[in-house]
Image 1 (cartoon, rainbow, N blue to C red):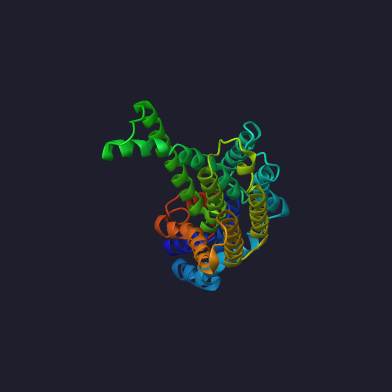
Image 2: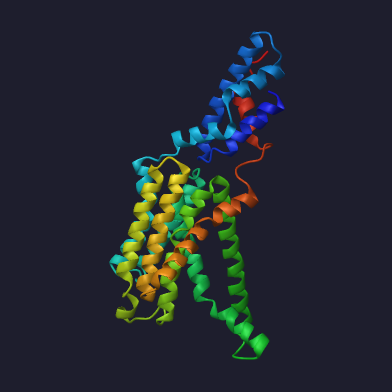
Length: 333
């Protein structure tokens, strides 16, 4: 086929934003249909270039075709929806049962979450995966937050001569961990955004809520303290918040239109974030509510801004076009 056809089909593919298996199936169907359309035009006596142009014109705008395919295939099954909400519900259970501080059960839950995340990542990145990724990133942020005193001590000693310089090996271990964690988070976020920035928002939505809770716990003492009254005073609101996010994730998967998906996620996320902030910090006032809502909305739009820089999907020269030529040999003459 001509370059114009390759470019047109690539435009459709770049706007599909579906899982790789579904995209491959759709592109195969379009490729075959396009071949038949071009062959039909050629049989009427026109050359291949004109036949290809007529076929493109008859198909319509690439974005419109991609949107129609997206809406036809983006609605997940109830199994996908439940799987998407499950990590929220698992962590909500830890808070509701006051077991988030348990030194065996809580790590086991997060090990299970990370294991399922890796399994889904290696098995083609199904639609339910992305909420699991968000919770898999939280232990990295937790370790980084808890160990923040080490680089803080180093900076204070080097620039102001205050305190004691930490052990060099400990400092190297912490800095190395920060670099590794940053690489994992950035690399993972970029890979998700290349699939669909809205899935990046779904992945990131629980992190500011967990971050607010973690900050408040640390300000009240430490995450490792044994005073049950201090440790568990916010467990109820955290369980409610994560349960709400679980419901919003289920709704997200069952919707078809992209804009409606994002609106639902933004509404649930903003309301949940504001409720958690109110219960953690007390009466925050109307202006603060508006500010928190705006911050949450901007936070959820970070993947969209990132996509504008890194792009979406594969390049034109990638293997998808070669696969089409191999699996669907040309029928034009």
